Amino acid sequence: MLKRFRSYHRWFFFLSTVLTISLSRTELLSNLYVQIILTAISVSIFGIPHGTFDFELIKTNKLISNFFKSSNSFGLSYLVLAALLALIWLGVPYFALAFFLLVSVYHWGESDAVAPQDSSLVELIRYLIEFSFYGTALISLTSIFHRETLINLFAILSNLDAAVNLVSILNNLSYLIIFFSFLLLNYYSFKGQINKAMEILLVTLAMLYCEPLIGFIIYFCFLHSPKHILDFFEKGDVPERFFTKLLIGTIVSIVFMFLIFLFINSLSIENINLQIFKVVFISLAGLTIPHVLFVRLWHLRTH
Image (cartoon, rainbow, N blue to C red; front, top):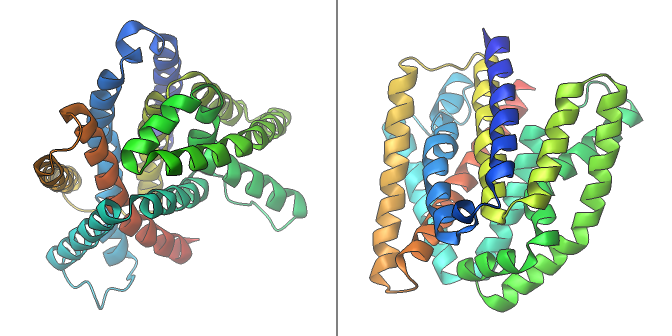
């Protein structure tokens, strides 16, 4: 059954990515405000649910279980930590943005790169290259052809000087990531793993061709989030009342985003579309940091 779902996800990713790439330069998807709304919807449908099972990871694998004795205490602690991180972002946005990007690079690389199959030097090098590719493709490759757009988005989340510096760093890194993509394509093609090679090719093309927010939807919502949920199932950590808990966790997260929206809106900054963009990513950052911590503990326990 799990193998079938992985096949479904693979086809979903391939088809949705090709379709999105083909439509990404249309007048509709080229509109920044449409991109912002689509990002908010996609994060709510695909992104947020993949972090709603963190308590199950803690409970099933007995990770720091003496501290979190119930789902209520865990959920409250999770949201308090997320809210604290969101407030830090509003106070020191440049530091928060840089920190969030570093944490995301680590999390995406660890989650989406195939773990070394043995202790050989070739496997270790392959893993480090793949870790670097998945960790940075989204934020580095988009800087090649969409530099100004990325600067503008980062400026909304921090300030213009910080955005220019960050994008310059990412742009310098991007050419190494293209080289890593080339190496991985040849490696997996030689190994006969065409599905993996196609995934790497589509990620590379999407991040180079699509606007940053469209690239984010493709990578985070179409690839990373479903992969994480399937990994969760593969380890046998499937909670009782799966869909009920999924729905509750998603609703709570969306309410959390809405509260942050009300707070930012009260500051009377930017227009409503840019506020939505800011809320989505600040909320995502606040929810991502504890999520990454618990996933790391889970990986240490199950690998």
